[in-house]
Image (cartoon, rainbow, N blue to C red; front, side):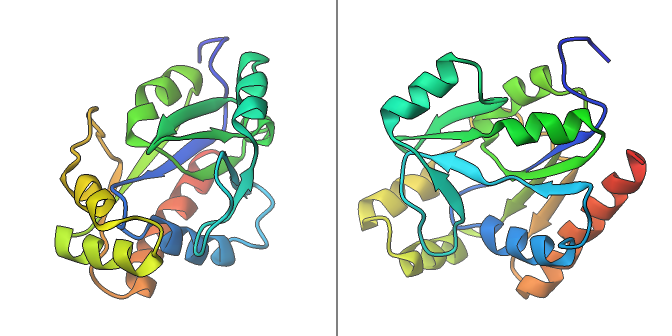
Length: 189
């Protein structure tokens, strides 16, 4: 392990297109691992108030930039006109040998892989029609925004360790994510 990469624990990033159901699967996994002290479900910091189905901390653009410039965030990125970050507790948990599960961005994977010694990627996806329905149901995006999100292609090679085609029940896809987290927890023990 490189001295400048945080480890020995794991950063497990759950990534995928808008509307794939990442937050739903993360909620299932969070409930499943509620009693496991070595698993942290990172609460993203974002320059948008928390919305339905999404648990995040909020901060102003100014506060975000100040914290980023001061090196407080182990990982930060911009997407959809907003700024996102993972807080310092992520670095601390990974340095202590734990597993941090975070809703991440495909675009930040190269940076994550450079900053952390052990990164695992779960790619959650679903067909465009399913994603369009989910995006419309959450009521945050206009029809034009939904169309743009559906046609956006990832700019980086995701190279996932697990792909979940989230088209069955939430319980089925959630079980796949939970199983993967359990395997990773055993691997860093």
